[in-house]
Image (cartoon, rainbow, N blue to C red):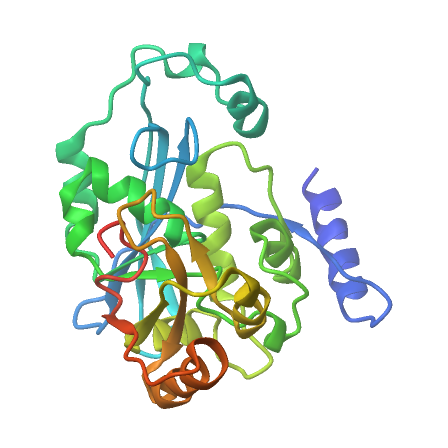
Length: 297
């Protein structure tokens, strides 16, 4: 068997050197490491949730996965500190479509409850929490555990320009394949291990993918609300990159866009000349990694 494994590894290495083949290796989770004395690292947490639905105000988390890892100031991943995985039985039956999507059944979660103290202790020393859709996961996490309301968050799906780096999309499985791996995504923690390898992947720039994510997350952005706009102007707003908020979350029922703070003058000029046709002062919010993706904003 050892000889067979050696031969397979040699064949995979030979194929990977050819421009005519791509080799995908099964993802094996990194074992925990022990930090070296005096080594300057920062600690982050990768987080993934599975839920009974999409509404963070009323749907419930049925599984939580986390991977705690260390990284250097330039975004290079040093090692995994620890992992966390747990089920939670919701107040009612898991919808059939959720079971079909996640593989999580009522029987699997029966009798399970989250240990809130253990979850808070696990994430307490993280300087950043990263999810592959933080706009979804943060809202659920901070509703269950107040600790996450006060953490900096990053989003590996939206805060890396994957297309600029040669990827055609930002779906996690696709990015993992691009990094040279495949995995059988059954548990939330498995997706966290997959995300770790995606963020460790060296981009054409020579930097790991985590580096541009951190750079983007650290920059403040501005959210501009285009309230009370005429319905017939919706296509112009959509082409500009505005998104619609239906008001059900307590935020304005309005179009909005998130921009770099250096672009605010151009954005206000667009609204004044193309949308409102008058001198207006739109509502503007300043966002940072501590407030971005939160249900409170």
